[in-house]
Length: 155
Image 1 (cartoon, helix red, strand yellow):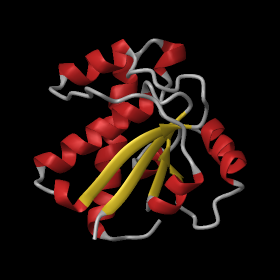
Image 2: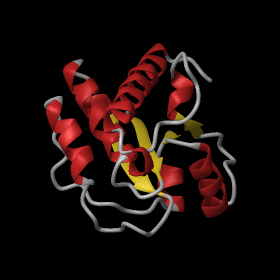
Image 3: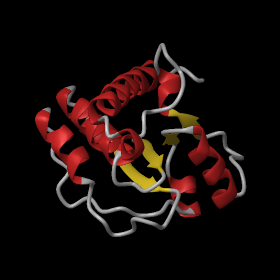
Image 4: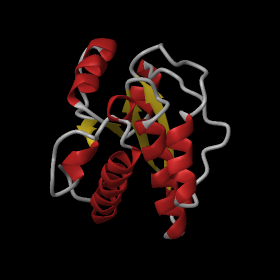
């Protein structure tokens, strides 16, 4: 059985695709890619069809991670039903998802940073311009989430 993870942010051009491709990289390094399905989506329609934002793409490339072909898309109710984990970058987008989906009846939605020793929100580089801070948050969050899933513990 696959662990199905969907990372979500506002536009799906910075934080959530960074998390998607970092997590794919981490599971590939451990030879676990057959046990995971990993994707990302937006809560908004603002960036639909756009590629990963160039500074986010460059930050991934600095660490040997590619994101070719990824374009922004909005999360749907079908996504909610399909994925086991809906991992969100910040509280505003948790609220947006609750509005979009009509709540979280299956308790699938959580914040990425909740899987770290410093719960909170992933720094938004769209506003800060600090893609290194976002990289650190995303990497730490993905490592913690992967550890959580592999231990089979519940939140």
